[in-house]
Image 1 (cartoon, rainbow, N blue to C red):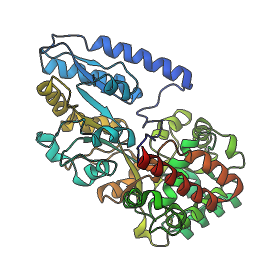
Image 2 (cartoon, helix red, strand yellow):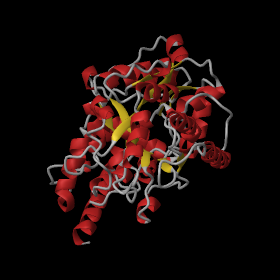
Image 3 (tube, rainbow, N blue to C red):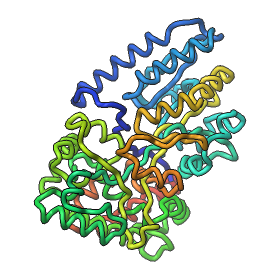
Image 4 (cartoon, helix red, strand yellow):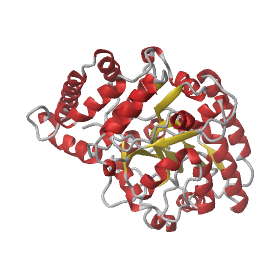
Length: 437
């Protein structure tokens, strides 16, 4: 089946800063890119011009710009510039990918992994320090022969963000079972507090939160989608695996959770959710660490915690939703292998890698990484330590399947069964198209 990208379009926030609109954010990113390009111009090139570095996350370009200038100062004769493109595909279409890339581990990047477009990095010293269970996450989307095509750089963990003060005032526990979670939602509603704030207007928030969290601790997502690819055109109610059957119980959970949403969820956006939670109007919020910085803009003293959503009656079943937020790669086409490897090794140094993840509310990917110190994420640390995590089911579904729109309709009508049948039909359609291409 052809793979297409589906990723959360908002990255983890670092520290609180001024609130911005999407338009001003993009304008600011362009300015940061220009500054980074100018700042990386010192020194002389190590043969054949500047080393090109491509970074997907526009919001951390300035952060990496500082790192690249430090790299230049420690490696005289190598000049590094940020690649100016905003998408990965044009680089490969032109046959001119950047010498080093740093990209989200998802279906889009997997397209190039599966085609053998990246060099084998297994011989680099830093590769031996990467946790095998985190490398396995990147491999769930695609592999090529026995190569180590990617070095996971940053792991983002997500769960239920909750207001500690509200929970304490009402004497509510952090729920460990599905029944306890429903009881907490009921108690919040009875107290006149919105139990779960939803932002259906931005569909990615539905599949990242409601869909992924409801599925992840009940279904082995990597195994499910591997089997779905094998079944291909035969997927359906009588197949050994299908959305309709395997996701039935998780979507019952989703239907129940949706019943505790704010009444105006259909018209509320991600920005609205951050504002409402930051004002202390909400008990819980199904979001990742990228929302914490925005919440802090509203009230930096708000007592916030995060826990993994329980969807079964066994506390041991609970897992956290994660994604490889950034992964390093070196294209086969680079003419600067030695310099590219030197840059990768620089970025993978503990003092560089761990500082980035600490500052950006993520987890480092190496065996010697320290724990994330931010207390807002403390509730997820144990899951990361034990590899009790999963990649969201929504990240495995191609963008040509409008999952977010299906979820909007299912929440509005309460008919999640029809949505699952539609997902099976769409999967068959894509599998049939690929089989006849």
